[in-house]
Structure formats: C-alpha cells, structure tokens
Image (cartoon, rainbow, N blue to C red; front, side, top):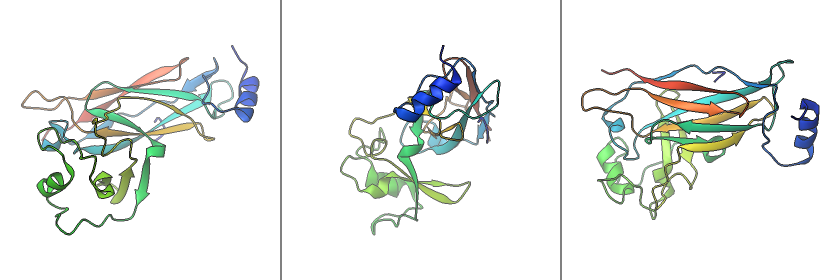
Length: 211
C-alpha cells in the first residue's frame, strides 16, 4: 500500500554525513493514504492488550522531480487513545512461538491468565516471559514480536505519537496496534490517524465494519 529553506541538494548532502532524520525541504510532499478497514470484535471494546496489528507506509517524494526522499522526519499521531503507533524497528517476524506447557494458545482467557498482571486492565506482567509479546497476523498467517519497549512494560506504555524517518525508498513504515476503538455500547465508530512532514500533512481513517 503506497500511502500509504534548504535546497534538496544541500539536504541530501547533510543526510550523507550526519544522523537525522531531517526536516523535509519545502518541495517535499506526502503520498496519499488509503483508509484501512477493520472488522472489530469484543477484543476492541477495552484497552486490554488484545487487538489487531495494521501496517501503513508514509511515502515522501520531491514534488518537482518525483524522486523519493531519504531520511526525512515523519510524525504520526493517532486520534484515539486505544490505537498505538509502533515503529518498524520494534516489530520483527518470528517463527511460531510455542506456547508454555500450561497455556492453551487458542483460549484467550488462558493466555490472559498467563501474561496479565491484572485481568481488569490487561497490563502484561513485567516478569512474564517473552512468549507474551508475540502477535499473530490473521491476514498473512505470520507471527510478529513486539520489542520490549512495547510489551511487558510495568507502566503500561501506550504510545499514540511517533517520530520516524524515511528509508532509501522514501518510505517510513509504521505499525498501528488497535487495542480498542470508539464504542458507544452498541456499535464501533472509526478513528483517524494524522501524518505530517511539516511542509505537508494528511490523515486517514481506520474504518470499521460492524457485524
């Protein structure tokens, strides 16, 4: 999904010899995002650590040349407290994480009892094993693992804001962990995500399909 005053020459020169990411030049533009659609379930009613992982790509190019811009600063902000922004560096593809002997991975209650400090708030126990931080993507059938800063944290870290940088393709990939969605007791409603490079900004929606 393609989404999802220094001169460009000078900026690229700075990128080549320094760290970054850097503020976007005046000619930089963000690509358009497509809205994402999610079929919510009872897991999305409350912030209990059980939810859905979505992937989005912010594309930054030069408006005049159309070339991708590397190492450009990208800001991401979610419009709902139950949607967390996770950088690509904190998520990795892993082999099937074999469950502990006393846990039934097909039973959410069994998993929650093993990993959660308190079933009321769903916070993962800081002393729990690494097994508790993996996530299965139902769409691809692949397993992902969150970095330690985003799982098993004693202060229940729930980041809704991120500053990232583009790669050589001009893309800043980020993950959205949808722990909960707006819910009025009868139906879920959509939530928004805002993306900015300073000189250009856009937003897209996480739409819902209520059963």
